Length: 167
Length: 394
Image (cartoon, rainbow over all chains, first blue to last red):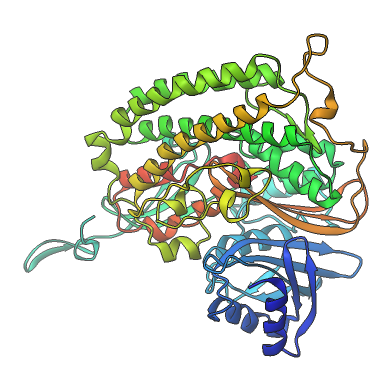
């Protein structure tokens, strides 16, 4: 399906909950509310005509002025060869979003990375641990207001290791 | 692979059984077969793997954050350090993302040079894979042959940009300089040289009886699993799915080039090795077409050995400031889909840059396929993913 048909199909099936539909550099861009997000994602993957079975990339953007964090999904259908950009914004203070790792298994590590570096909590994730940074690390470095204080970090970190709180 | 269920938990025959316990073993981060600093926490029952949990981050340098702190042209040199075995492709995807944001048209000659270089890099990268994978499963000799061949490609790279590993050759709007006179002849000679060497490599490694015994039926990934885990490159094509970005979503001039997408239905470690060995031949095919095309284009003159830069560079301001927008750009790197998601806010630095590393995503399938194998097979599986930790950890 091309972008117009995709847009038509989404409009027919989903009324409320779709914030905006617009063309982007990567095909149609859909912005939805967090409430319908999980159902919408499941529908995108399961519907015969949509069949977005391949999650290419999961990214997060910290929009510090709007006090929101945006999670971006780039989807692709291996059968129909069409693309879709799915965006959802969550408040920066309580960034919570249902996991999609049960729909696309690749989201498992992507979500762990997003949690580690951006601090988005994916509810229902089977194993939401830090992926790159050590377990005792505080803060989420890709947030725009993160201040990297190397001396403080080194002292506290060394102290924690000494106390045996971090293996 | 034997039926693990019957073996785990008890040893013995009939009524005389002994209860066994699982044990946690750490493989890496200094294990020779982990290609860098990957640590896999294994839960083993004797020699059998019950659980495998990769522990990443030993090489984490946070390029995404570093990218946000630099202007667009300054970010290029960082890209060499993601996947240092195929640095040219990293350069390319970064420049491509900025060009998309700027709406920039790259000169035709630069496009063909980019494709040519990228395919040579693919051969070099696959040669590293073949050599080191041979080492992983116990074949020492092919390593030397592979590195001898790769050396010749690196020599040619050195001639065009002066570097052997971190090239910094692609620029926003083109490439840094034209290829020198006579260079294309050397590339063509290399192609002629490589074909019999690749056949030799197949005899030595890919079709070797011992190698077959170590790889056939090991680490089988069914097609549905490959799609769900978002695998790309030889990892998904080894499961029989023709997902190749050069065909699926052609970028640059790949739509004008003839080549076949290599797939194999086996889904095991051997299939993926075979796919890579065949891909090198396809790359040579592409390289020859590029040479043909580049010969018809204006050459650098004697006075100006690197050519007038207008042939290979578009007009770009020194500090480009793209309009606020976002774009996801992906290319087919030797390891698979290498993507960059870039958000600009109208300033001279990217607001956000996310790197989608193919080896990172391909490695995520490991916990799903490793259980049920022996520890020695895990070495074969991890080596086969063709990970470069610089890009997994970023």
